[in-house]
Structure formats: C-alpha cells, structure tokens
Image 1 (cartoon, rainbow, N blue to C red):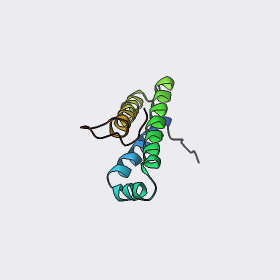
Image 2: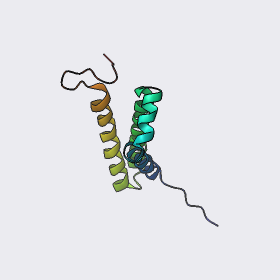
Image 3: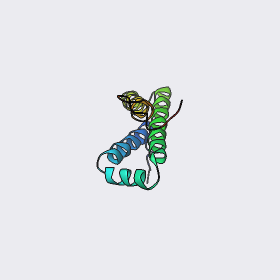
Image 4: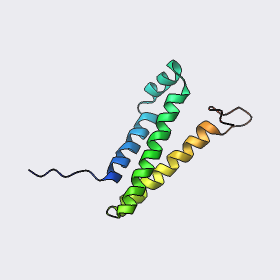
Length: 102
C-alpha cells in the first residue's frame, strides 16, 4: 500500500484555510481568547501562520514541482503578513495601534 505525502505548498494552503476559518467561522473563539488573555497570542498566531505558509510557498517555488499552487500560497501568505501589519501595527484615524511597536 503506497502512501503519498502531501506537498509542502498544500500544507501551507491548509494553514491559510485554518486562518480564514479562525477569523470568520471561529471568530467567537478568537474574541474569547482576546477577552480572556490579550490580543498578543491571537496576533502572534495569525502572524506565525502567515509567515510559515509564506515560507512553505517559497519552498515549493524552489522545488518547482507545484508552481501554480506555490505562487498562490506565497501571495496569500504575503497578504496575511500585510494584513497583520495593517490591523495590529498601524494607527487608525488618530487611535493608537493595537500592538505598540515603536
């Protein structure tokens, strides 16, 4: 019985799918974590998933086996990283950023 392994870009795509579900369908869990702990664990998890999936996409591009899937994973990973920057690190309309970094 032969077991086929998942490609690395596919794992990155599943991580991104989990992140989308965490922000949309599981938003109640997300807000509960923010209320009970702070914004830092949630933000760190979102950043980690974005960076890991971006690295998996780049790895797939280097391997060049799954080029189209790798490009999709790289683009969504980069958008996740920039979303983190815009949501958590930049001020909005005079209000301070959620995570102070400067």
